[in-house]
Every structure is written in structure tokens, then in C-alpha cells.
Length: 128
Ligand SMILES: [Zn+2]
Image (cartoon, rainbow, N blue to C red):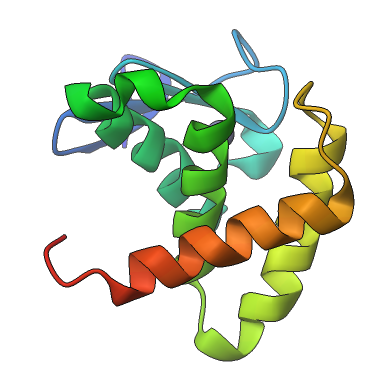
């Protein structure tokens, strides 16, 4: 959608902007606002990841889980967006991001385990 020269996408309680502003990695979410760099704008998985951050924002019981959990949860949600046969490769790729692009002090292996466990939790959930 193009609004006053802005490229945006809107959903239930979120709005995404195509911009380099406020974005350290490929995308970022602040409350209900999502910012995605132009070269990543077409990536549906990334949008799923950032939308999950907005869902975390609108879920006060998740506010105290902390930044590492928010990222693990968002990456697991992103993995879950892809077909099951791609889960292992996507988890490997996102585990590397989690280990290397953040300051959580996680190894690739530990990051893989965290995302895999969260993915299992999400897939076994029946009430969300
Ligand atoms: Zn994130």
C-alpha cells in the first residue's frame, strides 16, 4: 500500500513502514509500529517475526519475559510460518542470527535448542 509516498502494510493492531529509519538489522518493532528495510520489504517471514513482536507488546503477561525470550519466540514463530520440511534449515539460520546479531551471549547450538524448543511449544499449543 502506498500512502502519501509511504510504503506501508497494515494488520490487526500493527502498521509496517518500509524505511531504513530505526532499523539496526532487517526489521524492528516498537510497540505496534514495524520498520523494515527496503531490501527486506518483500520477506513474509520477516513480517511474521515483527508482527509477533507487536503481539508480544499487546500481551502484558509477556512483558516480563525479557528480550531474549521475545526474540526466541519471534524466531520460532517465523520458523513456524514456513513449511515443516524447511524448519530445520530455518532454525539453523535464525539460530545464527540469534547467536551473532544480539548481545545475549548465546552459542549457535544453544540458540538452536532455544528456538527448537519454543517451536515445539508453539506447535503443541491448542489455544492460540
Ligand atoms: Zn526480533
